[in-house]
Image (cartoon, rainbow, N blue to C red; front, side, top):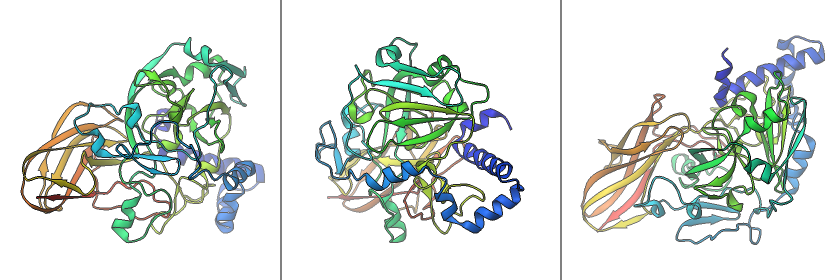
Amino acid sequence: MNKKDLLHEQVYDWVRRDEFLWRKANAWGVSRRRVLQLLTAAGAGAATTLAPLSLRRQHQAANAEGAANAIVKSTSPTFFYQTGSNLEMRWEALSNRGYLVPNELFFVRNNNPTPRLDSATWRLKIEGSGVSRPQSFSYDDLLSMPSVSVIRAIECAGNGRSFYQTAYGRQASGTQWKLGGIGVAEWTGVPLREVLQRAGVKPTAEDVLAESLDEKKVARPIPIEKAMADDTLLVYAMNGAVLPPDHGFPIRLLTPGWVGIANIKWVGRIEVSEAPIYTLWNTEKYILIGEDYEPEPGSPALGQIVTTQKVKSAFELPWDAELSEGRRLLRGRSWSGQGKITQVEVSLDQGQSWEVARLRDPNLSQAWVRWDLDWQARPGAYHLQARATDDQGQTQPDRVPFNQKGYLYWGVVSHPVSVS
């Protein structure tokens, strides 16, 4: 296998599962098949014991939903739906705006209140078996290093969760996002590989784990191949401004194309390991559990691990929009975590017929494309639909299989509109 394949999150999870089996077999002195039999027989309990105990205790103890002053920036209902420490962007706020989402409109997904950190005392620790020279970097140290700017999307794994209720009449657990848990920005920072090289990253390094400085110490690993990629950054600026507190000040991780939880905010520590890393966030949380999602044999995770987001589309309209009749220009945006959009189709009659929308430049991979369609709006009730196709050949389906935690909904959504 080419190591570049590990840049794809699902391939990475498969490879680490197989390596996990091999290591357990050696440690226990039995065959890989026997390890698989033992883990399968033990069921979920065996997997649970593999997640670090301290992380599980933190998870059980932390409860920041609804905490006072959980978010630093304005939470104006003109721009957002608010649920506890989370802000979902209202799509109508993007109407007639440019390609990037302004910082003040960018969605917020927090596990707990935004921490207030001081860049003067903040330090980034690089340590672990995968480096030969553990390091500690100050904020000014990072600002003095070579910088890179890229335009990429970050999307919450639960974006679209509410549509499981629409499709199945069953509510998945978690914040009931519509489609506003997505944003595209210009991110500026230091390539992660720059600090890893200064810490003497070893050829034997396998996994890299960034850990947050918030209450939960969120930590989810990525492979060394992804860590060394050109556009994997330690970000300190967003859309040309200092990274806002709600979005990770002083430093956050950017892992383009990977699910939102991998883009750790408020990074304070990075562990580089010569062995696979498993944490609460890739064994118990951010996994797919349901009739159509059998756990991978031999994996320490309780279900299939959530990986790269797929294809989605949204209209730049209020939900339950009320429009006046006449000629209109319908606008929207479509995106994919795995490439760029090649086509968008729009239905004005709830999927009975489809028209191809015009795509507007720019159309960037792992970001999004803006599109529009002429519409002679006549009085009545409508459920507008949009479906996109990306350059990997993925087209949005009518709906996707249910999972208990409500991740990765990428089915076609019906947007209610009334015209008078």
